[in-house]
Image (tube, rainbow, N blue to C red; front, side, top):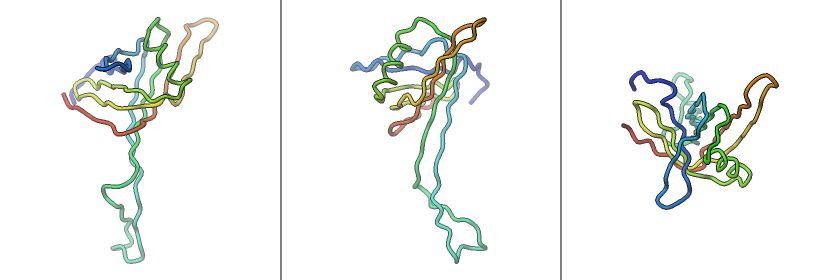
Length: 138
């Protein structure tokens, strides 16, 4: 992956139609992708040298995406709010500039709104993977 501007990390929400059209969620200032894998420990009394052994190819893989930004009049923001209330998984894409696209179904796990009396209103989102994800390199 080459050096890229943070603004080139794009979070896109599918419209639910066939074929699916994806639109960026506007107003985001920060975006974070976290990939995790829960390991399966199979260490036993005869493990070589007492070292931990992990079982390959099994375990639970998860992905979370988070972001925060300011309000922009945006159809995608209205849709994601409804997805939260319905707790419905939707198709999302995270475009990783210079690397590729992570895509799949996610649930809106958290949706926060905040604002100071002397500043702009802002919001943040946390998405949790809800199925198999695909990565397409560019």
